[in-house]
Length: 247
Image 1 (cartoon, rainbow, N blue to C red):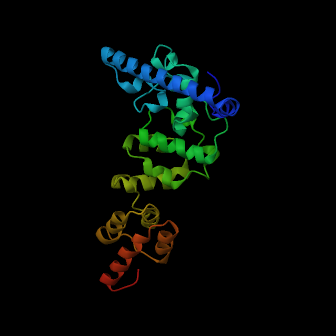
Image 2 (spheres, one colour):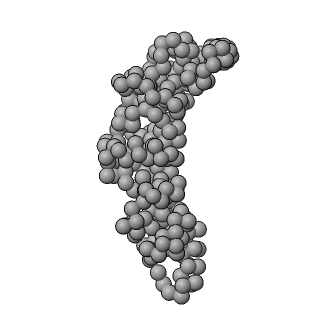
Image 3 (cartoon, helix red, strand yellow):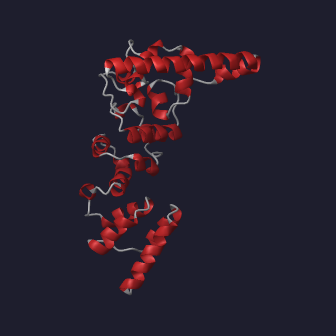
């Protein structure tokens, strides 16, 4: 397969636009025919449609022991029968995780890393998370990335990586998914700060009004403004008025 970039397409467009458009139309028709053929084949085999895609696009793949075995389709499926041009077009427009595990990103930056990690969370990807360069971006792992984490099994797998710098993100994932059994209530101020960062009024009410293990102060208001959760300022103000004292 040729390199997974769009540079060759840009060069071809500059050299002969009409020829490139004609070629792309041909490839589109070939891809459509392959999809139809693939659907008929899968109907006969009783397989899932996602099994014929690049593996990172499939949320149920477990793979083998080596990085390549984990992420590459087998040589007998429809993916490897596609022309290289179609493969490259698909990969060029795929998500960051798919591009990374298929070696289409030679020098990943923090933006692409967070995109890839978010893809892994959204897909509940079953590949080896250790192939992602966590330590390289330990100071650039964005808190919002963890808002895509939706399953306890993924939470456990990420925590098992043993990186302390992922704690805040994991706490926010637990807060947003209401996994209260995974929260450390010995650190209530930390939890209220995390709740404000991810905009969870329900968690603040739970910690302050129900469990009564936390209070609110000016720092919480500052965080709400800083992280763009202005709606959170209404509830603490109402709470303070109802309780007749400043928190």
